[in-house]
Image (cartoon, rainbow, N blue to C red; front, top):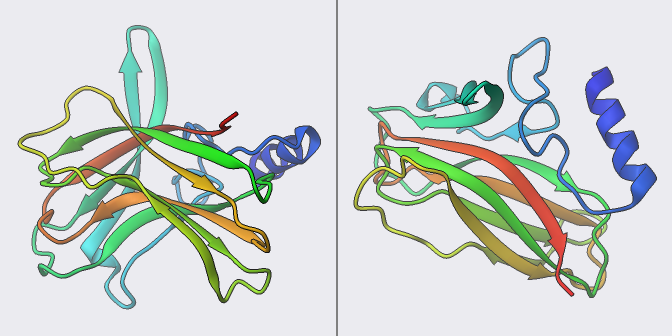
Length: 186
């Protein structure tokens, strides 16, 4: 919890938009999952998806990423599983690019980034952006970037970032996500 508080305090101090724990390095002591992120699942069916912090290595360097795995016996239905958080420091009228690095194992569609802008009460959608849908012919064994852009509408009280995969057609597959960036576009 102290790590999350320190991360949030740092964001508030510099005022720049950013995701909390964008490289998935800080892990929650209780769950072992990346701190600062929430995880979706179907009500009463959490066994259909798994979220796991994984160690990735590049030479002598080791870091973490998040893996989202859809159960092999998942029904072929329209539902998306994602890690998500509310972004801080986003300014109405400004345009932002949000990116993430991804790899895949056994998926038919690439992971996606979704940005949702909600009113101050969090009830009405004012804006929405999604990275382009991409069909996969095979695994993405090397890191590839997915991205989307959004201009934050006036009246937006919450800007929610979601990064994940649709379950439909992806049973038994895994998305690996890392290095989320948020940057204002000039």
